[in-house]
Image (cartoon, rainbow, N blue to C red):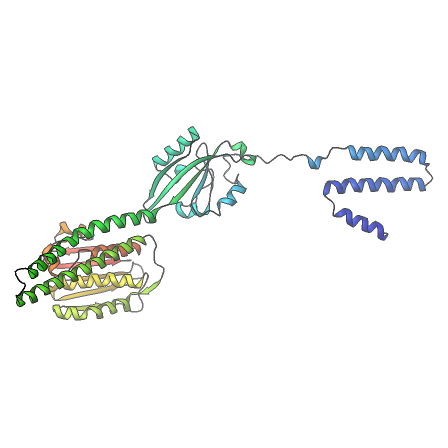
Length: 421
């Protein structure tokens, strides 16, 4: 092929498809006309035929320019996502979102919705996952009226989460026009806000209730020292000792309240560190040994061979076993012995039991032991410098660790607190 012709064809290849086809047809007609003339056909016969063919090419309808019909998608088809463009966009949103048809068939759910509520087969009814009558009635109302609505919705498992659910009609047009009106359900997670609100109100209520007694005591002693006992040095020494104990108790109470509040804020986040319980419990026992000796209690450890590993937060688990072993020493002091059993049977959950041989706990009190400020005996608890929050803290830590606290007690024989991971 001659160089000029090759260059022309290369330029033609870069033209748009429709123009390229017409240009090539005209080039071929011109070459055929030249060939006919070269073979001896007179120009009188070639030129009119050539002009007629050129006009026919230029006048033909541009099929490539005509709009192509969009593929139809049936609303009930569970194998095809009818909303590819909007679906790809919703994947970038970090809040759970469902797209449903007027009959409440789920047409799309983004990844955030899958993580929060599990995967639904496209085309399944919304009630297959969201069974709240309030949600379904709200969506039906929006379908009937076209007006947006919202409602507060709570999920209890695996941990409590609160969402503001909003539904609104949306007109996507185009490929989705055959589906009729579509509706978008979005879930805004307000769990953290609710926890903060509850923490604030609980903190104020609990603190005001529990701090009232020591504050009244401090005020009374201060008034006495300023008045009748102003010059009584013996009274000064005795009253100042009591005031110091009351101030220390208030400090412990505030520390426990703050600890409980921090735990509530992150109760829905499971820890992911691998912790060996044997050295951890050994550390707790060593720390409490001076208290045990002071109370005349012997702490005995019963450990299996090898490591005993669980997923957990080391500092929080230390707090759990410090609470349980310290309580066993204080409230089971009469039995003189506290046994700590660590069980690591491969076919069973890991368990740690703290067993005392004290007076035991009456059965009617056992279900309420982990309530805030609940005490079997108020006088006994305060005499042992308890705040009434220790087991509540244990319960919240174990809830975050997806573990259980099991309490068994026989009056006159002792009590066993078992942590089951």
